[in-house]
Image (cartoon, rainbow, N blue to C red; front, side, top):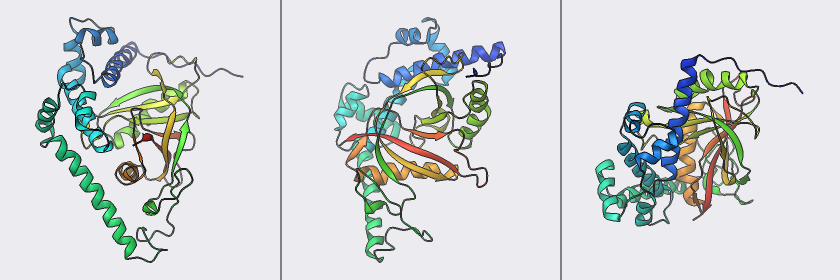
Length: 330
């Protein structure tokens, strides 16, 4: 069996910047895993292997915001997502899980950032979901059974699967949703910070694909992980990891970080279409399918999974992937 091609030498400046990014991303990941605990500057500097004395200045220059502002923003953004996706979790539990010492402190900080109380935020999400479901039921009542829940021009409603049971609320959706137990995956990750959309495609094409080719990974399974909700997080602060499945003993050469995507139970939807439509599919899964499923998000990352060799149809330009949401019972 032939060995993979030797990666080309990186210019010194490129190598150092890649190492810098790897260390800073380790800090961002550490913060997200420990939002419920005090985040000490000295400890975070040690995670990055940077000088404790200079780390605050280094972090602010790299991220465009101070360490305190970043941690406060991540706590509030995470809380906003939990309020939307975990209706069974109390507001106090969410406050404590995201590092606030009391419900009152959480409510003050939340209103200052989002302009409403946590209770009003959650009620607004619930009202939107209820309106969507009511509209779907009205369309079903006003249609004959064969045409219920379809978009104009859609010939066949899809099959929704959940442990073998079909769900008629989702015949309108052009996807199948199945509950699967996925194994853990060892991956090499490279991070992009900035707006989602076309920039993500450019990141895969111009940065990740050449790296994959140089390491003999052209046919590998890929995972795209959007860590932030762009309706909550400022677009220029959104984090995205482009991940490639690698053998357990793989050496990345410093540009990519090696980590393990956790296995477990996921809701998996097949997507095929223009890449511009994938955000809408994520939204519909979260706002329409999830509330009616008896499941909720858990702490593991969600991702898009695809084959590097077959994801893009050169004839149509359509993109194919699996949308994977980690779930647990309500």
